[in-house]
Image 1: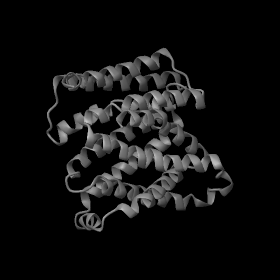
Image 2: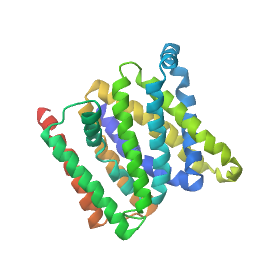
Image 3: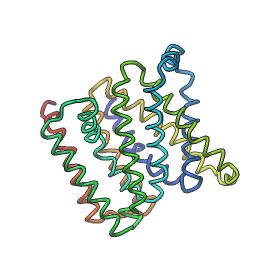
Image 4: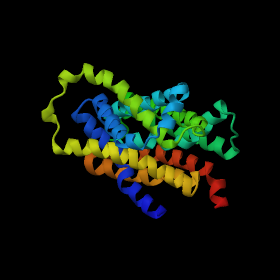
Length: 290
């Protein structure tokens, strides 16, 4: 089963950034977030238990905060990826697990190993190297623009804070409930801007390609990928789940080159390699245990 999941991720996981870049260029990125959120929320609504929703009504603060961070990640990434390359957007997300570990150290007082600290430093060096490269080239087909990369980096930290927070509340709520509330909050926030921008939305824009892209983002990137990740964590380990990063990155690079004519230059490879070394080093002890 797990090899099949990795094959699915290789084929579709890295398509998320490419699909968002494509759809966000056809309609406003905030409109895309609205459609994505509503479709995903409606799709999983029948599976949400009343008891879980009652728990949320009695104590909405933590789950609402998590939903706000989740929405920030979706919105910022949707705008940022329009100003950078698919390759760069995915590379920036490579050290997610390390940043989560670093935030966990400061917020949850979790322990960090020496290798994790070194790996985190290397990953931050890699991100800095890539962002500085975007100031020099401003080439949207490789390094992207500084503004686009800045938005993606902020989206990354929103996602990292979200993961740390949901780690605290995951004992109180089922994963499905958490993600459902995330979809609802993302939909409500984006709905405000969707209504304000409604006059600028043309139905003629919605051709079959755009509709298929939105549906793929909602069902494959938003629902299927989340459930597959949770399944792997439950039936194997968080380590195996973290390994999904590599096929996602590889497929994102392939999609960026094929569909957006993006290019890999030496400097981009160097920055990505530094981050991958940092991530690999931080998981070295876990690999040895396996």
